[in-house]
Amino acid sequence: MELLLTYITSGGVISTLVFIWLSLYFILTIWVWVSKYLSLTKWEKIEKNSLEILLHGSRNISKNSILSKCLQNSATQTSLGICLSVAEKKATSALALLSVISSTAPFIGLFGTIVSILNTFAQLGDAQTASLTVIAPAISEALVATAAGIFVAIPAYTAHVLLKRKAYELMNMIQRETELITSGDHIFHE
Image (cartoon, rainbow, N blue to C red):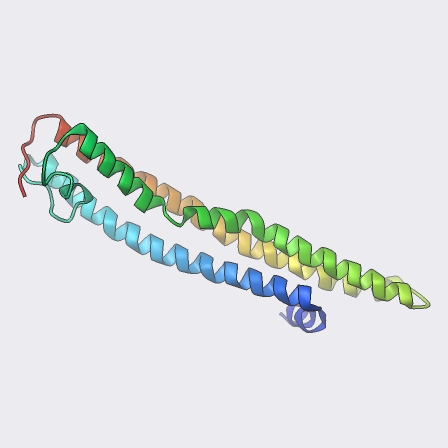
């Protein structure tokens, strides 16, 4: 932590911007992860309940299911396909943001490291002597930005993969519901 504070206080404008950028990425990652996980979990419970109702031979679909709006007029394959597509878009929203964060955060950190190393070498160029005792601490401080980029990328990538899997499972459940609806074994009324 001390190394991070030293890097921020001794770094220039670029170093500060890199850490602000990475901090925003980290906050966005946590916010998307928590909010999306909670909403997908709630939605999954609703669709699971709806699927169970259908599997038990009920003639009515759960009113909370995303498919209930599609069934108000008719249960055609086209209307259910459109609803399925809308559900998929809703379930996977914000995953692109996590993908961007996980793929760009290491590069942002690397950029901060390169700028810091360039500044270090520029300062050493003005000095009369340059020894390992002078260069090593400056380089280690510069590498903090790369570490911070990786630190941000790992949770973003993990959240992306886990949420993608959760959305996939949800979409499979909704797909099963549409298959039951279009099988002709059920007649649906609200």
